[in-house]
Image (cartoon, rainbow over all chains, first blue to last red; front, side, top):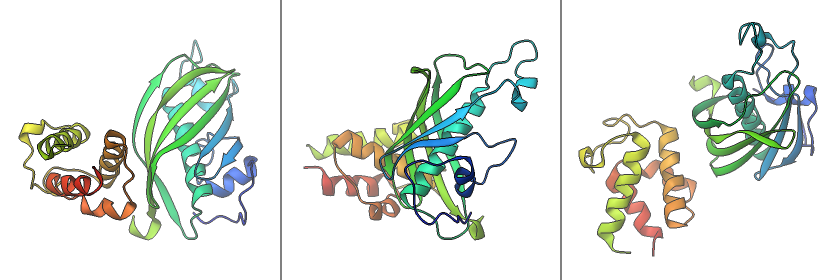
Length: 155
Length: 80
C-alpha cells in the first residue's frame, strides 16, 4: 500500500502505524512502535484488553491469547521493519512466507506485548527475521519468520 | 575448505530447507520447477550459507541459486 509518511520518525503512534500496514480491525495487532532503527530493529507494542474479539472463542471459559494472533503481531512488526528500512513508493502487499515459533508462556488479557524484530537476512524484496516477544520483561514467544514484498499488480 | 566437504554441506543445507533427503536430490534438478522450492526458500538458503560459512552474499546472487550445483558455485566464490 502507499503511505503518506514522508519521513520515518523514531516512534510511530497508532495512526502512523495505519499509514504503513494494511491490516484493519479485527486484524490490526499493533498499537505503537516505540523503537525504530531502520535496517537494525523495530520494537512494536500491542496492548491486549479483555475486550479483544478473539477472546470470545479462545476460550469461552478462560481467555488466553491465541498464538496465531501473536504471530500476526510479529508479522505486522516485520512489515513496519520492512517499511522503515526501505519505504515502498507504490502499491505492495506483504506476504508471510513461514514461521518457526516457540510459545514459552501463555499471554493473558491485560498483557502488553513488546515485540522486537531484528533482521537475519534482508533483500529489497524479502527478509528473514528474528522475533522476540516480552510481557513485563519476561520472554513469552520467540522465533524466526520470513516476509516478502509483492507488487499488487503481480498478485 | 575441501571442495567435496563444501559440496556435501551445501547439499545438506539445501535439503534441510526444502525438507528432502539429501541423497534424493539431483544436484542439477531445478529447485523451483523440479523440487518445489519458493523464492523465500532461496533467501533461506542464502542466509544459511552466510551463517554456515560466516560470509556475506549479495542479493545479486539470489537468482543464481537455481540448482544445488549452482548454489555450490556461488558458495565456492566466497568460501576461502
